[in-house]
Structure formats: C-alpha cells, structure tokens
Image (tube, rainbow, N blue to C red; front, side, top):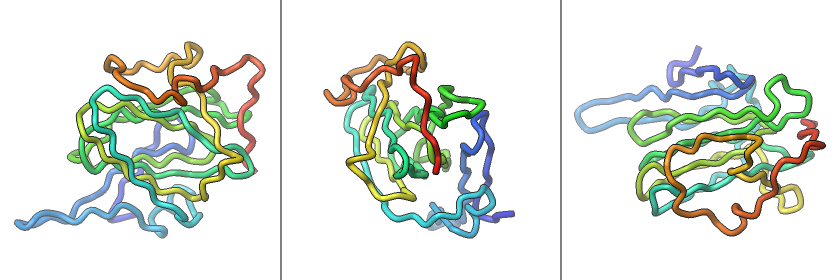
Length: 188
C-alpha cells in the first residue's frame, strides 16, 4: 500500500480519484504527483511519456471532451495546481459495463486530488474559478491521426455542467454528437 497516495475507486471501472498525501512542516509541503511503483497498485504500469500544462483564464470555460482512438489510446493523470475545475470523464470503452456513463470530480490546488483516467475515456473540464492551471501526464504520445472528441454538450451524455458556459473553442463547439451506431473504443 502506498504511503504517498490513496487510490479511491469511482463508479467507472479503472477510473480512480487519487488523494496525494502531503509531507508538511512550517515551511510548506511536498506533494508527489506520480510514482510508477505506487501507480502499479491500480494496474497502471506504463511509462509517462508526455507532460502538458494548460492555463485557462476565465471562470465557466469548458474544454473537451478529448481522447485518442486505438491503437494510440492513452491513460492520463490530471492534476489542478491553481484554481478549481469540474473535471469530467466519459467511458468510451467498447463493451464496458459503464459505456457512455460519465463521472466528475472537483480538482483544485487545495484538496490534493488528481484523477487517474485509464485508456478509452474522453476527458474535459469546466473552470470553476479564474486562472486554472492543469498538469496532464500521458502514457502515450499525441497522435494527430488518432485524436478525436465528442461534444461536451451532447444531450445523450447529459453532463451536468455546474456553471453557465462562458466560452468554448470553435473546435469543441463543433465536436460531433454521439451517434446511435457508435460502438466505442477497443483497447488493444
């Protein structure tokens, strides 16, 4: 059992809320964002190959719902280092018992939670404060040929975004709705 993380299962199989345990003293704290040995506890044994950082200035902005198709699927670890976000994932795994179900968590700089998102999930978020910084750790390299998205406002998903939407990119506004024939992502 990890002495740096608590891995908290969610209703979506393989998706974990990750509580980071702080080492604190009068100077401040140390927070570990990732340790390969510890993440093996939840079945994540792939290397982190890419780390990205986003900044979103306005409160109420939606980014997402992005993913990569097979064979370039990727797991992600999402951490909010400044501000607060309503972080959402949608299970797109073919034949999953929770196919097309979504789950959300509040991530912020104070609660010390991250989200471990396994392969086959779409990811997005809405900012709940100004100037939100997120760190993304990826198990796969970005592949433009495998990049895909679903519309964050798709009525079939019925995601309950907590704030009025003040902004979305043109790309995200035009992401496709899920069709009845959509079969999901096959994890290879």
